[in-house]
Every structure is written in C-alpha cells, then in structure tokens.
Image 1: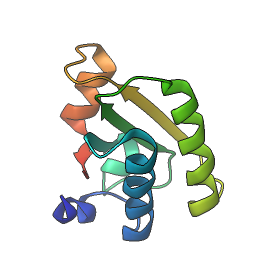
Image 2: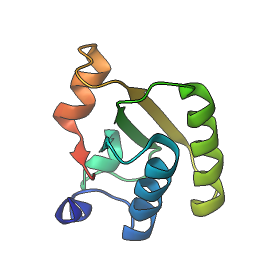
Image 3: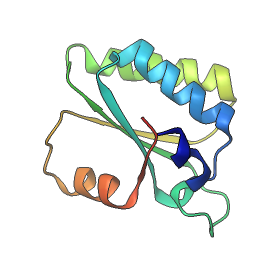
Image 4: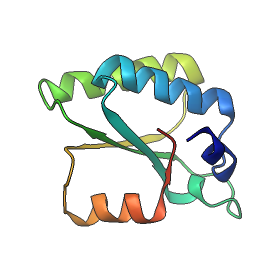
Amino acid sequence: MKENFKKVRLSEEVLENIISLAKKHFGKNIKIWIFGSRADLNKKGGDIDIYIEVEDYTNILDKKLDFLVDLDIKIGEQKVDLIIKPPNSSDFISQEAKRTGIRIY
C-alpha cells in the first residue's frame, strides 16, 4: 500500500503515524483509507478524512478518542474527521470513502 502514499496530499511521516496509531488502537486486522480533499492531488488545504474498517468494535468510542489524542500529539493540531466502521458496512459514507478514497493500509 505504500505505493499509494504518493496519491494523497499528506507526508509519508503523517501517513506512517496514522497507520501505526490505528494498529495500536484498533488492532492489526484493519483497513485504512484517506478520502475527501486530501485524496485529490489537485486540491489544496482541507481536513484529513480517515476511514478505518475494524473487525473488533469493542469499546470503539474509547479507542477512537485515544487514537485522535495520540494523532494530535504526533502530527500537531489539524482538523481530522475519523470514521470507523465494521467490514461490509453498506451505508453511503462507507461506500463513498472506499470508492473515492485511497487505501493506505
């Protein structure tokens, strides 16, 4: 998936931090997409939209908050929209994030 790093408007360091912290908080059996404006090389600015597919939904709100706090410490204060869903979610945002996003892990 590292070849996809060049397809998003985030540094390799930020992407590696997202991946390592996601694995720390949600386990290794996850999939991660960057979507929204950061997945479009022709756009500028924008928040960081992250979609994470997780198998273990136990204590998901606590895990989400811990991830966001750790990410803020690692990459600095940035607007981050984090969506966490179980595999095979069929709602609109899940389909859209996977269709238009760039998978990084």
